[in-house]
Image 1: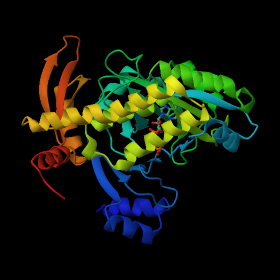
Image 2: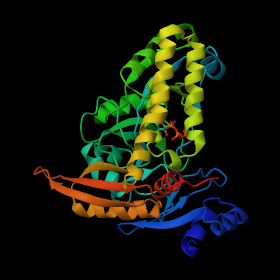
Image 3: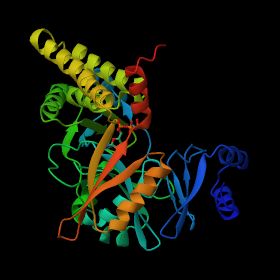
Length: 378
Ligand code: ATP
């Protein structure tokens, strides 16, 4: 349910009345609040309002971050999407998506799903120069939060050794969601000292060999992949390294029953296309096959042992916060996401930060394994 105040606002902003009724009926739009700031988030899309869109009380709208098309055959994908035109290549950083926006006098960090994230909102000033919003209150900084101490992602990129960092990859306009051209974004980020994803420059289909080399290098360096963008940001495509496909499977297999089978199959498929496109054979092929098998099986078997010995399928993760209350807010935030976590440990780092250790239990995966281990037949 949304209040009549928000309903009027959404109608004024152009959400069709019949769509609004349907969305309300099935919980597709939800009213929420953070520190007294009220907002509505879209769990489903509605004419121009993408999933993850957030509308604030004052009518300011942050559109959901759009889906990026995935290429699985690099050569043909690049030719099909960019034709003979040039495109910029940037690193695809493995973390979680945040949209950073100033609303009234607060800078907020929104998750992909349209929640104000208490953790990221508290930490974002450590990474982003807020002067930017004084000069450009109408712009949204979109980036990846990545590192080993992340509330949403198990691992970070290899070059973030501790804590977490922010990497800008898009600047969008409030209301329209329109992205600034690539060059303009690079310039603004430099001007305000906002950390960005690594940029590999301009490519086109005549330099495919260099693109292959780049993918190979990123894969060796345990990095996730690339995102290719036309200068005007109208055409965007992503490509993930074989390393990332196998590593995702490894991370996922620990909680095998909590993930849809498509999670694994999609990654096997992408790896197969890589091996086919690159004509990987012989020993190198065998190495990939072994790595894939191990990634799929080892953490899964370990989880079975854990449950067979009376334990649970669980994950621990740590984050650094400035206020312990932020950690408690994260517990509530996860509850709303339907995720069960609790605080395991609180450590004073004596530098203004607390290191909080959370434990997340996976009740469904645990139950499933327990039943099968106990002989359930089907
Ligand atoms: P979708 O398929 O809808 O894009 P997803 O979460 O499955 O969602 P991913 O495979 O994770 O998609 O890839 C898209 C995400 O990659 C973006 O939402 C963004 O958070 C992240 N990302 C990291 N680096 C970049 C970058 N340089 N440019 C654009 N996105 C990036």
